[in-house]
Image (cartoon, rainbow, N blue to C red; front, side, top):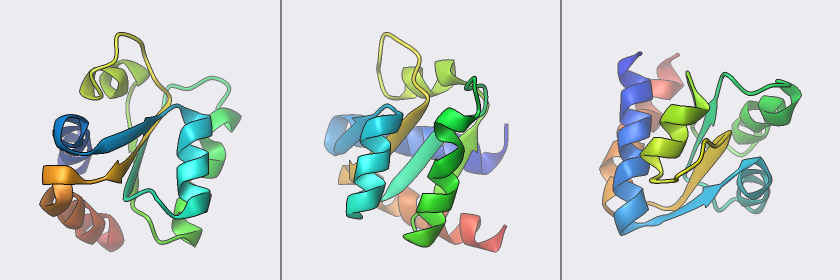
Length: 110
């Protein structure tokens, strides 16, 4: 797992308790369209891939960092959910603000 992926999951864990998350592809899509999302993280192991395929495109249009992590399990666990999830958006950073800033800078370099 790359350092960027670890930071993205850590940002979700921090924002879960000090900020606000949107969970699931539909909620994440809405947050992106409204421009509310500060960071979008989605799982690579989603089947069919079309479910999350639009997220990186939409995030790029809105200049919102978008990170792909390996699994729905990891993503669900980071968000403190008892189930897997395909996508998470941080809409209120809380104490994850600096982490998100770092992720934005690093993601911009890729």
